[in-house]
Length: 147
Image (cartoon, rainbow, N blue to C red; front, side, top):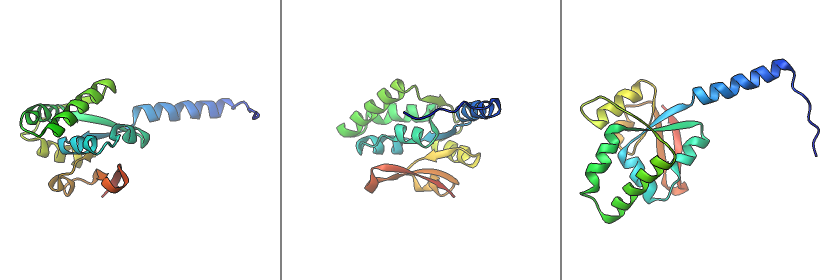
């Protein structure tokens, strides 16, 4: 059993500030459709890994709509992956937001240039945003890039 030393009021105050800062200032990652489906098909717990890295996953409303639309047109495996994604987002209470652009890609690029991290497999988007979350298929995980 270890010895506990009481914290001075100064350090207790700093500790509270750090916890509040962490809860308020978590970095946001916008998830793209292809990233979500690929992670689920590869059995990668991307939401858990993002949380461990201090990120908050956010799914644009337009991506939800895109997932609903493509569900009718894709293979059985992809349909199951989309259903799993919807369940995961509901269970973990993943935040939603509107991008407000003509296309999902343009909205993700705009938000990425504003400072959001973008999780996508689309090279056209990845090349235009400085903060990226990528898929590391060999390691069954995600990687963070600050370009």
